[in-house]
Image (cartoon, rainbow, N blue to C red; front, side, top):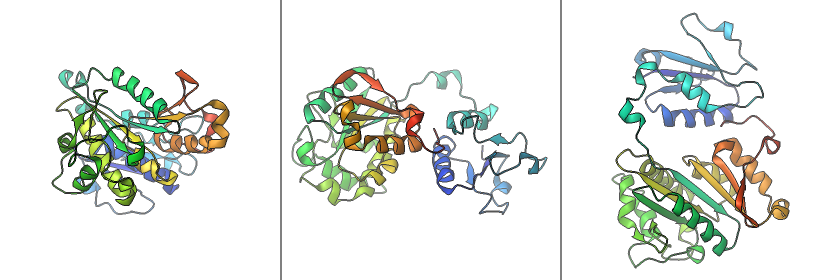
Length: 304
């Protein structure tokens, strides 16, 4: 069922994040900014229209009586809870059937390590053990060849996969064709052919692969968990790389090294984009504990 979502939000950054997040759950919806697009073109093809408004700069009484129950963007505290918005936007008739509700899809996880390779591998090994109920566990090393843990046979490597995924004929399931089993039970293309291929091919190629990985993990055809190791990218590129991840793990050496690494800025930035529920922080000196980033790191409204 096609419908229109109008988001009355003057902050372009917040609007763009909301649009990207909501479109993942409602791909058939027309999501528009009424401040920029005043036409009713989308309304003519919609069964109904829902309105989300920012109470800081929009008066709900200004909406037409034809708009039922406009949805307030923020609750008390100024945090935008996308889970709440999604549940309020969901039409009753589109509720999943009992068989659909019981189906479990896979997940896409990202590991962003600032630790030695052995610490990273120990952590990823624990992830593979916790994902043993999936049909496939896939690992993608978006790193330099020097930092990759496994080197596959010639012709089956990360370089080949990155080159292939830009084709319009490439399907998410094709990722599996480039993988072999490593010693931890992951299906993986292994390292790149040359040391700097990930950087040489450009960040957009890695973003494309991550989008395919998201579709593979969330496919209803089989349960596939994908773990992507993300290293060497610019901080500004991480939000788009991680946009489709269910969880992002940040591995740090020790709590007393936090300020030196500038990790608070990284955690705060990723929290704004992904939401605190999708960020988990682990320290090498506390292997069995994790700390989710708190509101003290956030200096502005966030979309979660």
